[in-house]
Amino acid sequence: PKENRLVIIKNNHDIELSGHLGVSKTVAKISQKYYWPKLRKDIANYIRKCSICSQTKVVQDKPISQMVENYKVNIPWQIIHLDLIGPLPRTRNGFAYILVIADYFSKFVLTFKLRTASATAICECLENHVILLFGAPKYLITDNGPQLKGKEFTKLLNTYNIIPRYTANYHPQANPTERINRVIKTMISAYVIEDQRNWDLILPKITCAIRTSTHEATGLTPYFINFGREIKLDGGSNQEVDTKNIEFDRNHDYGIRSTGLRKVYESVRVKLNKAYERSKHYYNLRHRHDTFEVGDLVYKRNFALSSAIKYYNA
Image (cartoon, rainbow, N blue to C red; front, side):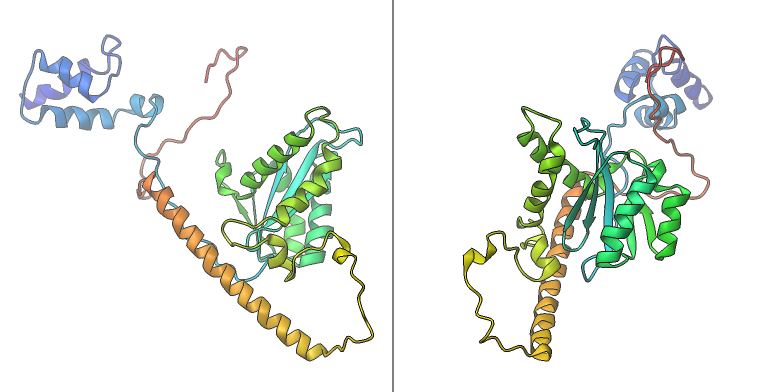
């Protein structure tokens, strides 16, 4: 009888002797004694709504949420990303953290050695070496670190009308500087094998290497996109510059330079969009789209740490 089906499923799934097993094993167990039309469908629906299973079992489906639309950016320093690396082995000069700030458009990277990861130190670097040099960005993307959501940091953003965009908790992939962080850590580890307390001495050169390397997405170096020329590290090959025969036409030079930069920016925009669409395609293949309505019951993953004192094991 239909009125007994729910009781049968409950007794063969919920009790300790049943163990909250999955659909196939529960179907096999019930089928030994019972049968009714659409038995498997009824069992699957019951288990899908089981709150204990939803809270304790690892989800085998594709993760929910596909990649959203990309930020619309036209020139460098409209959108920046900020993140911290550390604590690292404290150097002889007292540094233990690296503040990483990257431009979304050009991929230009700035790194700062910090003794403490305080809001004061971060604000000083952001204001004096980014905002007052490249201008105030429209958006700043960062994580949910307490020093990045406090009064001092928020006050600085409000002063320059910068809109913060915080990534989701425990989801660092949403901040592109996480990938830059991995590159920086890998490069540092290659040069501090014998002495890990001198990473602050090589950080400027490592940062320069990143800026002057061709980026896969843009096909150009971040330095070129940002400054309109490649960096010179050899003094111009020691060539003499004949200043006597150089004629300057400020308007003509400005026109050529601005036209060239517009072409560069347009090329970068096209390439960034192509790179984004390519990433979006492969990302969405591994994720499923779902929608939620107000009032829907959802579960949030618990990231509590194990604690012997609290008799809790994560």
